[in-house]
Length: 178
Image (cartoon, rainbow, N blue to C red; front, top):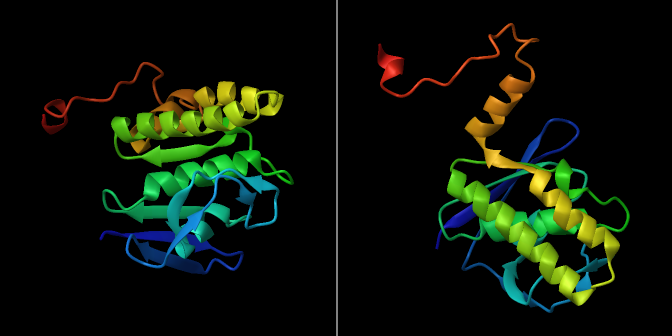
């Protein structure tokens, strides 16, 4: 099985790494359980998640980086983390405040689709929840893109501060070697 690594940095700048694989201590949770951080109900699908995946999903007040090989569960962990942060009763993070960077357009599209589906499934269980309706609309504005797309957007937004011609373009691969 492929392993997954979630890194976090504490306030002293020390980096901690949580490692897990698909074959380590599997746990099964029901559809609704108390959020492990104590921030209200959690609506994870009945699914097998490891203790370390649970830590990455419910860790609060820290940024994390999740890296893993294909099929190790990183997308599921990130989607669950985003949904739980979004629905946190004490300190919810609005859906359009997320910044998620991937390496491919396909991965970015899949991430946005999965978080949208997760929120829609939650709304189906709680159809009168106006906050959820608003978050489903806002997820379309979330910064979920490739590293290149995010950097391109950043440069285009702040070209004047960078003293860059606003009509710049990214060169094709063949042009870069001329």
